[in-house]
Structures are given as structure tokens and as C-alpha cells.
Length: 206
Image (cartoon, rainbow, N blue to C red; front, side, top):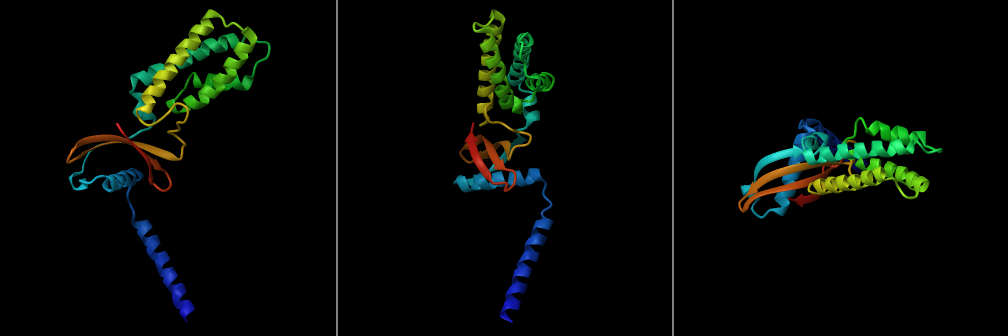
């Protein structure tokens, strides 16, 4: 008898949980924003004065209007074209490497910079081995590439991101910029949230 009552109790709990989850009609966007507000409520002493000013998801579209980032990506494409031109003169080449880099010359989103760097390391190694002392054009391309990477990293670090670890498309995290007001003034920050649990993983005030 007791066993049956216990089983019925567990079944009732499961049904309640199912109904609650089924009734949550909020969009993913609303859920993430609610989680961010909850996080702020735990950190702020004066949350009663909280006012939301701006929410923006940090994705590829978010960076599309950033001129510094877009110029730097174009520079990386140009310098890679120069290096591929010299790579084509080598007796031994990797068709796979050429194909992968060539694809990025036509479509190069910012969250593929880390992969792009790994492929360029292989390209640089082959060129350094072959030439020893690099031609002037290659040295100039290398200098432009380093400058572009420095600008990219500087721009991304402002949003708690890095060229060495960024995935805005298929990663496990989602990033939000949020500007809000409290009694002591306005605040802006970058929030990283887990896609599965929606939990805030990190926060950086900017």
C-alpha cells in the first residue's frame, strides 16, 4: 500500500513538472534575459531600482557593423592571398590546406579566426622552411597580419571574447550585452550563458 502511494506521489510530481515546462511559452531570448535579470538581482543591493535599458545578443550580426573588426578580417584575407601565391610555387603542397584557406577568402566570419590561425601556422611553417629568409612581400604581409590580429583581439576582449577561443555559431555558450540602470547609476556588461542550463557563466562590466 505504502509503495503504491509513493509511486503515485512520484507520478504526480512528474506530471506537475511536465505541465510547468510545457506551459513555459517564453522564447529563448526572453529566457536568457530573465536569467540575466535574476543574476543581477543576486548581485545588486538596490535591485528594486533596476531598469533595463538595452539588450543585444552578441552574434555575427552584432559585429557586422564594427568597422575595425571588418577591416581587420579583410586584411587577414589579403595577407593570406599573398602567402598562398608564394605557397603555390612550392614543390610539395597540401591541397586540403589550400582549399580550407581559399574558402575563408570568400566568407570569413569573425568566429572562425581561431581556425584560420591554426591553418595559417601550417602555411607559415611551410613558407619559412622553403625560403629561409622570407621575401620582402611576405615579411610585409606578416606584419600586416600581426597588426590585424592585435586589433581584432583588442576589439573582442572588450566583449570578454578572444581570437583564440570564440564560437558564436555552434558553441555551448551565448553572449549578451546588457545596459541597465540601478540607483547608483547606469551599468553595462557582457554576460555569458550556458545554452543548455541558461545559467550565467561569466560577467564582465564594461
